[in-house]
Image (tube, rainbow over all chains, first blue to last red; front, side, top):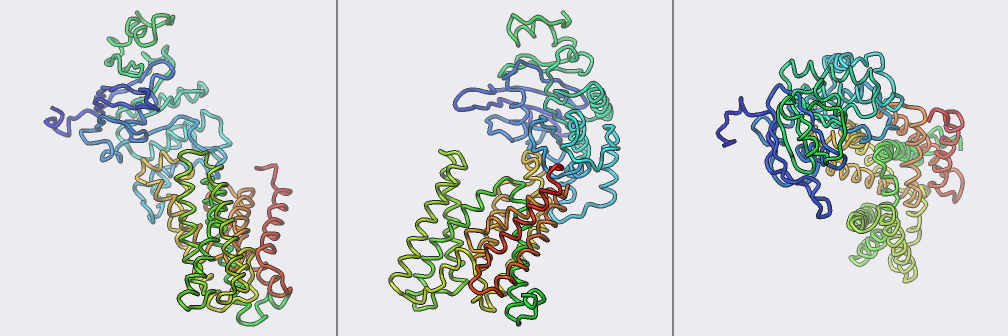
Length: 250
Length: 283
């Protein structure tokens, strides 16, 4: 019935039967996921559960079978409305690039091959840096920053894209407390402005405070829905195995 | 030698020096993106893989009654054979690590090329004397038309690099983000390899195919010691390449039997050495 849903009301993300195989082994097993617009969703699960793989498969960065639609369109067509913040380890930190240049890379779709970087685009990039609290670092080398500061710069690059759906791969992994609160502040303001946020998340203790929805997965999606009804001890032990001992709400 | 440096050693010598400078600029600029993409060794394999094509190109042109050393004909043979070499590397990397595949292709194509060249010179077809200058470069017997081809090729590569600088940088820095921004990394890599191939072909008569890798890589790594943005690195690398190409061609033209390639490579190596001493702790 997806086809019958008017585009204006289609969910921000609709994943149907998405599977990824590595050398014959299932890394992601027919994932089904629906993310309503204007929500903040945590993707939670044990190591090797295929959380990053799910994001990459949605974006087409990983060969997959099945379907992913954003705002009612195939993801490839909706790409200008989607921003992705990769895991920290994904780039070469010795690369000769300044912070402001990284943020400007977010505007490539608007400038195109020969397009000029206009003063207006520069101003927008500077504004995006300020929103993540990194305005004083614009001319620093990206490699000279701490891990948390780098993560904030990549969030600023995503902001510069002007997207409506933000996919983040462990945005809080290995960052300091200041960065974590800065990032969560930005993500919440994005949601309050009508954007949709989906983040792979490791720290179960902060799920209820940070997110309104959760997707529990271990190679396949085990449960999804509002945090209050889905993020339960029973569902978590289904996801992580019965041995899990954690201070999570009953 | 001073006359050569000041472009007063005759019209042809001046043209050769300017051609070498444009080649150096193109090599430095292309090398900046090549090293950022971590494909330096690939360019060495490509350069060595040109040799069989040069030998075969010579034979074909002689067989059709032409002048065997006609430069555009040799370049075409070199391009086809380098393309075949790249294809072999790509196929082999499905089964081998990339460095092993690159090394295997480099050595076997080069070995085959040397055998071909030896045979060509042994049977005395055409006028193969001087064909071996493609190995180490020699601007001494260069024709005016050759110098113009070099200058034009260098200029075309520079313009193309300028046009593609942003997508090339984005693919090298973060290929995943480049894909999501609508850039095709495979196409950008192919474009970069095409530009590097153009540099290799244009450089055959100047640095020769053995040492062109030094003109691609050394100015780029030197520039990275000083500059902190992609345009900065590419621009400085192009300037270093241009200066060393220009001076190297002039020196080689004024010292009898001095091959051009080694002189240029010594110059860029010196620039790197000085930069390392001055800036090494910044790297």
